[in-house]
Length: 210
Image (tube, rainbow, N blue to C red; front, side, top):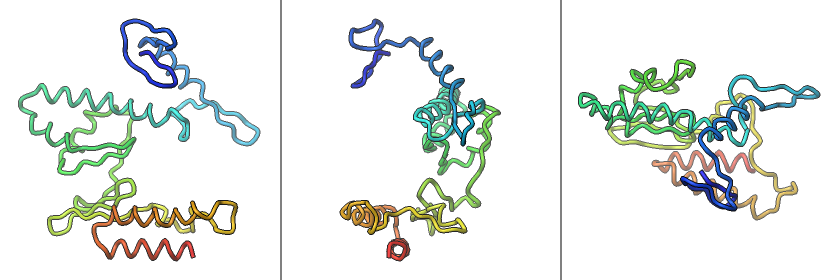
């Protein structure tokens, strides 16, 4: 792969003004990265020896690639098996954002999870029923045969208040502060399928800002 700060592309030969990486170069670089991640806590410096710390620039991309490798191998395997074609359609409707998996209309996902992912990876089922689940900032629920969505914020479940909006008497300019309110209303309107859920979110936000 040839890359610079503007673009990257695959090539069989190196190009001037581009840094060229072979597959072995990439593997060596990633191995070095994994073995040389340090975290400072107080006056002590620690070296990370298990996993990748959250907040590292590369962590989301590496996690995504790591899981994708296993998922693509699984999909390639079941596509070659004529007796498992029904599974292909089910897993085509399965989505993942980093380490959060959503499997609507795929009741067999849990049966094949160990076949897809390595044994070192622990999967936790977050929904308590098959017709209701949180996913990222969405609350998904099936009611009378229809999919209803509204806002889900896990911070609302905390037993203490969270400061997550700007104060008008601080150093933040007024225009962006008022823009937070408008942008949140737009977000609520896009996510909530029911007007009553939009009203609840609006009142909660307005009360918090006031």
